[in-house]
Length: 133
Image (cartoon, rainbow, N blue to C red):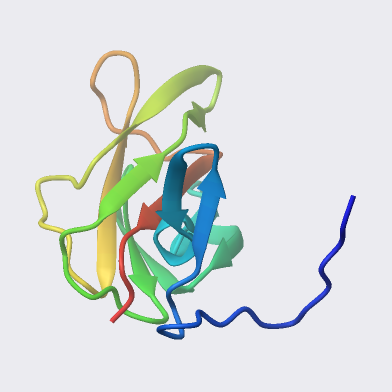
């Protein structure tokens, strides 16, 4: 097996254009990586446990947090994936955008429990896919 060790990949025709081929399927590497992600403790004084491209979070109330990006997205038309959350003794789930439109510089989420009540989540995760500005 071969090994490539490098600090930088640059596309031949364009700097950000690196293509990965798996059988007959191909994709651009740049399109397939998360542009931002966050692992949040949403109880008490909210805080990120770990994150990437997140400049800060804002507590808007029970189960309602805004994540601000360090580097903005190219548009508000991105993909948000979110994980299951731990809400005290109950499991909850992630709810998209709390009726607030996503912007290129932030994403707002809400956490609901099994009875559609808002809860502060002990563990909540999210990631953003799309193009950076």
